[in-house]
Picture (cartoon, rainbow, N blue to C red):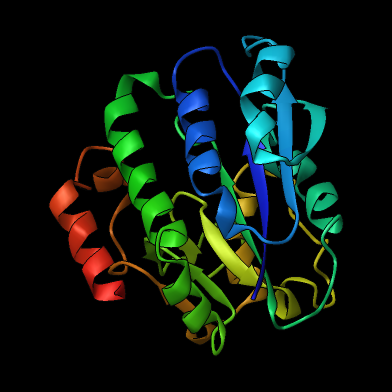
Length: 225
């Protein structure tokens, strides 16, 4: 399986953005295809040189763009995925963003949630590859409810999608609102063609408030193994 990365990084000053970069570098070997980082800069973000230095070991193509607060990661999403265009069924892209940079009051809990998403999606890539042989989207914390024009989504916006689904006609039709990327897989892939690496329908309120813990993460990892 060819595996690509797209990561949206809005490096608001503080410890969270650099923690996310550390996770990307930790799992660098997962991506044997292209790695693309959208670096969204604006008021309150870290120095570009420092961020580039931190990203250096990832060996990624970096797109420096102006942050658009009203659209967030959706503003530059189409541009980023266009760099990876192919319809190969054996090619897939992992998408994620630096979740929690603007929610420092919940940093500990959000970091735990993100740790689960990194470990499940990237630390168990053999299982993910196996799912992608028969399914078209894989992620954790699938929520089956209408959201951003989609009947289902992966809460947290960490997901894998196969390229024959990603680049089907209409792939660049992305609503102009800030949650468009979270809803994107559900607009490209039917629910029955998706996989959740955790149980379904965990409310976002729990995810933001400490429900994810180490025993749960280990249980999910054991189930994948």
